[in-house]
Every structure is written in C-alpha cells, then in structure tokens.
Image (cartoon, rainbow, N blue to C red; front, side):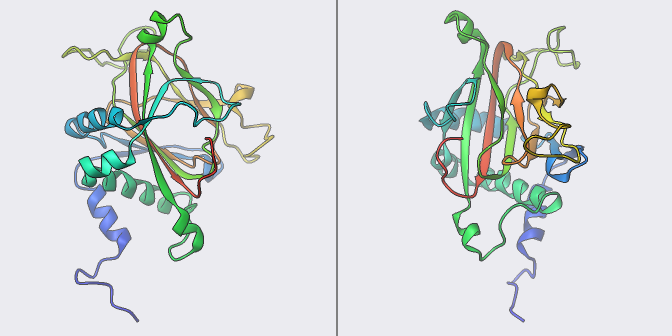
Amino acid sequence: MGKRGVSGKGKKERRRESCASRPVKKEFLHAKNINATVMILRGFLNAEEIACLQQLGPKGRLQNHDRSEELDFEHTVYRFEEELVAGNKALHDRLLEAMFLADDELWRGIPAEGTIARGKLHAEIEFISYDADLCAKRNASPPYIGPHVDNAAAVTLIGQLAQFRDDEKSGGSGYNQNGGERGYTGGFNLFEIGGEGFGDGAEDGGIAKGLYRQLRLNKGDVLMFRGEMLEHSLTPVTQGLRQIVQIELCRAKVGRH
C-alpha cells in the first residue's frame, strides 16, 4: 500500500476542509433524475472575492463567436482563466474544489484520475455581463440566453456577482439597494424538470416545452449542475446589470458551446 503524504489526508478530505473555511448553506433543486439535480451554495463568495472577479473578468479575452450558431443569446463574455490564476490562485482553486466536491456527492460525471479522459479535463472560466440598460440604449433585445446544454461540460458552476432588485418586476426578496449598486430585474435561471424520461425528446423535461424549475441566486451564491446533460436558460434581464462567473469543467475542446 502506498503512502498518502505527511498529513495522511486524501484530496477529497483536503477539498472539504478548503470549501468549509466559512459558513455556507447548501441547498438542492431536486429532480427525479440525479443528473438534473442542482446544488446551490448560499453565500459561497464573500465581498472581496466578488470584487476580485469583477475586476479580473473584463481583463480576459472578449469572446464574440464561442456560442453555437443555433443558440439564442444576448450578453458579453470574457474568458479569463489566466487572469484568475495569476490574480487570485486561492479563489481559482476554491471554485474548482467546490465543483469536484459537488460531482463526487451527486453525479460522478468527472472522469476518474489517471484516465486519458481525465487528462483532457480542463476548466473554461468566463465573466459574463448581462447589461439591460446598455441594450436599451442600443435598441437591442434585453440580455438573456435561450435553452441549451453546455457541450462536454461534466460540471458547470455559476456564481452570482450582482444582486437583483427588490421590486414588483423581480418578484421581491427583501433586498434593498444601497451603495450605488445598479442591481438588476428579471434574469431567472431556468432548469428543465428532469423526470424519469430525462434527456433528448423526454416528454417531462424540456424548457422549450414550457416545463422547467425556476431559480435565482443572491449576490455571492453559487450553483452547480451537470452542464452537458441538463437543459438550462436565463430569462431576460429587464433592467440594470447582472454579472456572473461561469466555469465549465470540459472534457475536451469541442468547438462552440
């Protein structure tokens, strides 16, 4: 039997210790099929981490043509893997550790260590901006993204960097704007139902058929799901600015998402 290292702790134990460094409330958006279950970590990102992501994200590479031609969307995307690693390696690692832990607990979709497939696994990290006010000035449609899956993404993470406004349009949640933050209205995450017939052509599944679960995060919350399998979308952001960090643990480079 090989030795495990000085601490005697495996990778999973070290990941759990790292992700448990501050109080985080875990919730689930359950489904009949485990591959359609969504994990939510409330308060995962603190104010300093949010500010760091907002600063580093726009320093990345602007992505104009990385979405599928069949996908309907209106938003701005920057890829910033290198910027995040250089600017805050600890935060980069903490986000990825959460994704590995979620997969280990729920889906077991990440390839096993030591396999060729695991060697191709890589994180694609995006800073995404949904600026409804800017779209209005351009006479463009409000920012949104239509129903889709994240091609070859074993796990997808979405971290909320902006707070939605508490008003009639947003459904109200007790949040009051302060400090000059724009906030936003609209912008609900939709996930397909994910019943027993889960998958392409399922009668109890797709968002396009009007069957979905609705969720919206508070600022600092993170959600994770089986990106390559679970159909998801975002309703239009009707006012203000919604910003997120999105990470896809991709199996291989497969072209557009």
